[in-house]
Amino acid sequence: MNEHISCMGCGVKIQTTDKSKIGYAPPQALNRETVICQRCYRLTHYNEIQDVSLTDDDFLKILHDIGKQKALIVKIVDIFDFNGSWISGIQRFVGSNDVLLVGNKVDLLPKSVKHHKLIHWMRMASNELGLKPLDVHLISAEKGIGIEELAKAIEHYRQGQDVYVVGCTNVGKSTFINRIIQSFGEESGHFITTSRFPGTTLDLIDIPLEDGRSLYDTPGIINHHQMAHFVNQSELKIITPNKEIKPKVYQLNERQTLFFGGLARLDFLRGESRPFVCYFSNNLYIHRTKLEKADELYEKQKGKLLIPPKNEKKEDFPSLRKNLFHMKGEKTDVVFSGLGWVTFEGNLAEIAAYVPEGVAVSLRKSLI
Ligand code: GDP
Image (cartoon, rainbow, N blue to C red):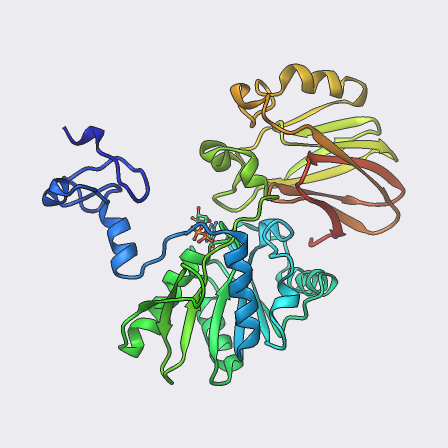
């Protein structure tokens, strides 16, 4: 009978038998006009975190107001989607406040990625975007890696001030906040509350710190140029790595092409034969073909062999935009924002990288 009842909060099917499973609600909850699952109930009543969607205006107002206060800003990015998860304009809004930059999901990187190189790269990339972070940390909110060190760094750098945690949706901010609640909130013996941000309809999660200050979780902004917005939930599961990435190596001759599902493409246009090492979700299908066949193959196989996108969605999927790169010298990563990257020795090569219009593709000095 309960099969047809869905949670008003998250839409999951309600069940009343297993507390430990998703969608559980106590039987008496079914008598209410609106039924929500226990998880959503806890999110709203106990300040465990829930994503909220918000208008860009509200978000800008928050950023702007934070800039007027004295506070430490903790900015979280997804290291797998650095550009896609960057909040544009953040450098203007933080004012004179210090920023601690945090790269989340470090558990997904192959062991061969050198953390110090990644940190160095993140520093450079943020400098280029106009932001000079005080410090850069790598964590895995999900696996609990680097959390204690980060908590200590926050305590060290905040110098008696409030802390604001900012980040766009899907960077793992909720997962991180729930971890931080364990290390800051519970110990302090104060209650976590929500407080309304002045002039907006937005509730911030207010985690009390020992000296009477607070760590605030701000709502996540939706970055429309993230690859995640071009696929549905089940496709997102395919493209988002859920465990350490196992690189796949392709020895390419010039005029060969690789397709990454139907979402991205790389043409090796000119240069000597060499290995191209692909770092993508282990579940994403990679297809090699000849350059002269590539366009036709894509037309025929998009949504079939080359998925995501799924066949029924392929008409809505934006066409792939071509970006040309000339490489001289050092080992280079071609980064497909939100999807993965391809590493090769850049010695005298010409390549084309394709992504949907609106998604970023960029080069960086190899992290490996
Ligand atoms: P939010 O939208 O920023 O609040 O992000 P969530 O905390 O809801 O996380 C978004 C997705 O990233 C979820 O599928 C999480 O399971 C996943 N995630 C969060 N932190 C990590 C992490 O450290 N490692 C990995 N592999 N996945 C993570």
